[in-house]
Image (cartoon, rainbow, N blue to C red; front, side):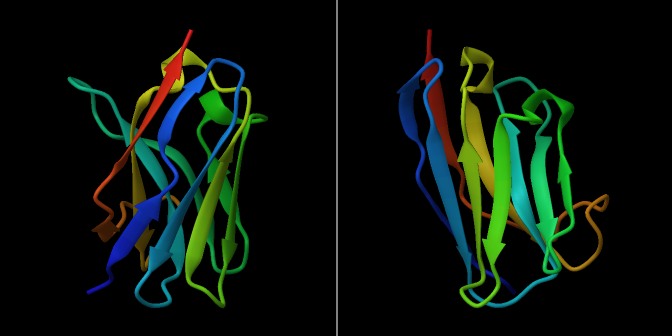
Length: 116
């Protein structure tokens, strides 16, 4: 069982930036971020493997950047040029399979609110 602890959510104006962090209780192949708004399915934001291979949602390409520190078992999501439609609960994810596979573990979620 891997525990995930997120930090860094909050309220920001459109065009601003936020950085999310997620620390895992142990090493795991894929880490990343998904987001969810009420009434909609949870959707991929970005994921990254231990080797640095990444996958992004089309809606965040060029604005968000995912990275990880394997020594700290921590993944980061740098979010720039934020838009109101980025408002959601962001969930850290971790998994043993690939970047196209559903995660095995989830964090508790952190709220990101972008005001217009």
